[in-house]
Length: 85
Image (cartoon, rainbow, N blue to C red; front, side, top):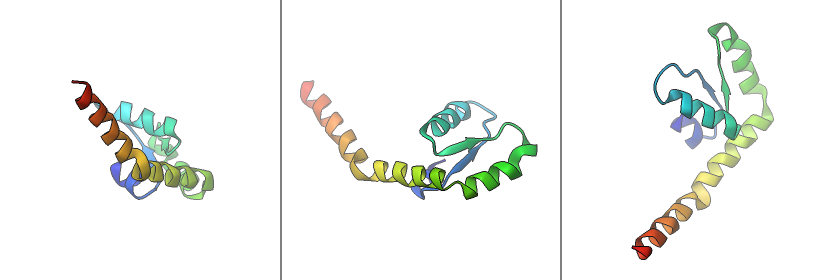
């Protein structure tokens, strides 16, 4: 998951245990992953992931939002909370 986000690559998610379901849902809702429900669908889903230019664009935008401003926004929120204490 983190590799895909860091490298602006679409993910194919197939959750099977614990927090994987939550992570998969968040990635799919963010528009940066496709969910695999059965292995027989892996090939068409992989082809879709590779060919979907919009999916790749969303991945690049998501990565950029994480790198540019995301860290600063988090730092700002932490500083505000510390100052309130």
